[in-house]
Length: 165
Image (cartoon, rainbow, N blue to C red):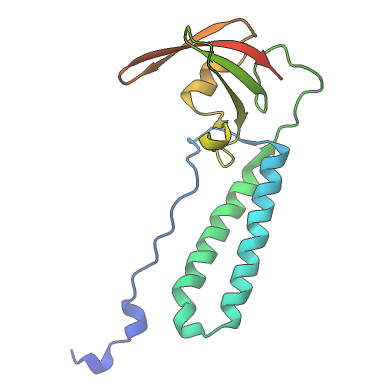
């Protein structure tokens, strides 16, 4: 077939869009109120980006528009399945979704604080761990003063729950 009859636009590869944070099948999509606010803000940013792309030169922007549309679709699906969990009033007695937990690491004096959040909010650098993570699952429904053991690939790590708020 002659190249004269090939539409170059049809030869483009579909753009790669990285998936959102993993949420196992059948697991509810819990989010904190702050997490829902962040998801909605992300949606506003994507809609604004899409509006700017559509207004530009369409030929050069088709892949970018496809990426934004795909990200927007994935985000809308995540927002649509979100179940906002309000934090408990007062000091919680056990670790729950949204709680801040202070852990003592092993026999050291070193402590670390984590908040248990939704999968889209998780950010270890900010001390936010997903409720689906192994550590969060071990912490759920535990009380201050309890000790947990997190089994890792190369050994295990012991944590003592110092405070829950």
